[in-house]
Image (cartoon, rainbow, N blue to C red; front, top):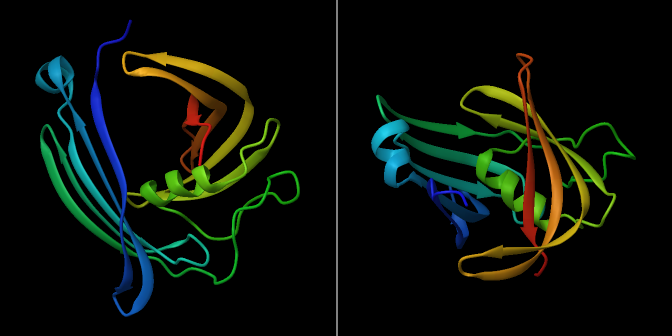
Length: 176
């Protein structure tokens, strides 16, 4: 019963040598559509992230942000520790290292999202740091206009260093 507000495309684009090191190139595109784009908030953003294949941590992120009244391009080079990966929040307070917008999505999707598990990740986006807390609450079948899908249900809370926070329920496909 909701209108379509945006279209999101995510893909693993390539694997090879990028900027002098081995990496995996991730790409993302976010674009509002319909009445949201025309009357409320026009977004047409592109993201490219290069991640270390051994750790999943980004070593370079590029963003082209096109919103109603602003266009900005940013490039961020990350200085990441080697050989660490996301681990459950129950055993440590936080995951060493930091992710960007795009690598966060792929990192969370690669975690063992078992019911009751919890994770904490650090995210940097547009010169701001965030903490993301993920708690897996169960499984549901999601019905959409393109079919029904088994999904893993997670509560995701994004907390900014300036004190603001945002909570959402996120459904991940329950497949490889």
